[in-house]
Length: 219
Image 1 (tube, rainbow, N blue to C red):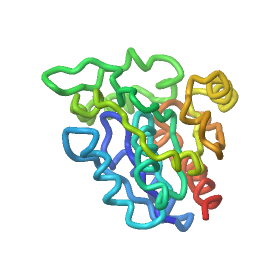
Image 2 (image 1 turned 90 degrees about the horizontal axis):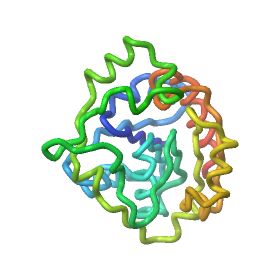
Image 3 (image 1 turned 60 degrees about the horizontal axis):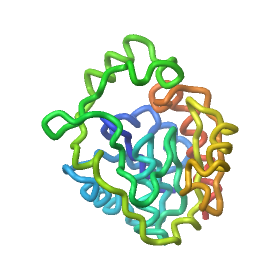
Image 4 (image 1 turned 120 degrees about the horizontal axis):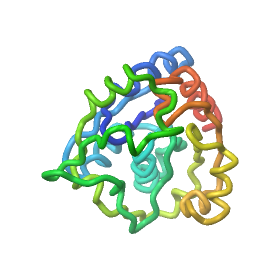
């Protein structure tokens, strides 16, 4: 199956370099995306341009919302969505307005906001590589308002990969109404992954196995 891999904030398609060969070895066709442009609409256009056939769409962290926007725009072509360490924002919420912008760009804020389980599995060398390669994100992306229009997105099977939090915790958040889009989705699977927030760097084989499993379950 074709698998679109959407990176989260400050990352490009190379973030998936260690995951891609694992997916190919399992018989899939991974397509890592680098998102162009200065707006959320530009990013969504890039995802939809790659959606030329039924595919599993994977979003990491903030890009979980971008993957869900693809399901909303093309529910007939998105065979399934996988959220890795993130949750789809509801209609009317800003995309990822979590960090301050400087001159229209949101730079990587350093490791302090990610202290604890998010980054515990990254050694100092990995942190330096990440920070050195981090790409500032246009504020026109992070501050954009999410618009969801097609309720058929709720029919698209969804998998939530739970790295720095547990599947049990995520289920509780959904039940409590904290993740309304997942509460409304009709087919949601929760999968634990013992890693920090960036499993594509620290647990690529394990992450690929979960993505391949999600792909196998889709028609």
